[in-house]
Image 1 (cartoon, rainbow, N blue to C red):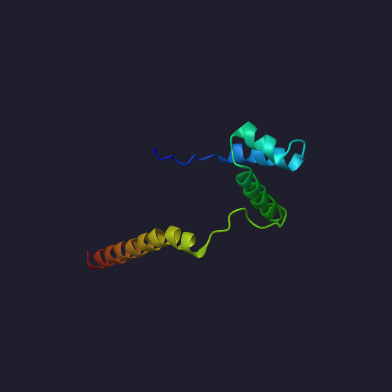
Image 2: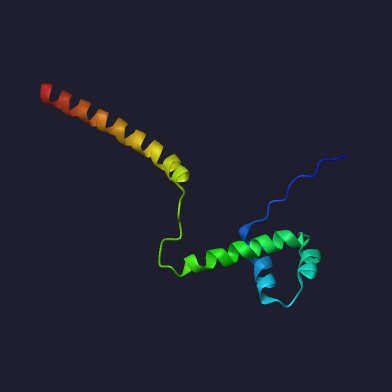
Amino acid sequence: MAKLSRRVHDAQFKTKVVLEALKGHKTLAQLSSEYGIHATQITLWKQQALEGLPSLFAGKSNVDLSAQEREQIEAPLFQQIGQLKVENDYLKKKLRTS
């Protein structure tokens, strides 16, 4: 039995499918057969879109990072800041002794 690989859909495709689902002109079964996606997946995408819509109008930034994502971004930056501080202190010390 051959293993099926998962398909990865880009944001544009998902948006197109969700908009069609929200319009309500076609049934989930019709959308499912038209786009080759299971009806449950369309429903999940639709729920995600509806949950995310209020944040568009909340006036907050579009990017809300989790603590783990934020830490992954900040850790190398703090490391670089520390390294630059040590180098700066070393150069100040060398400049005074010259």
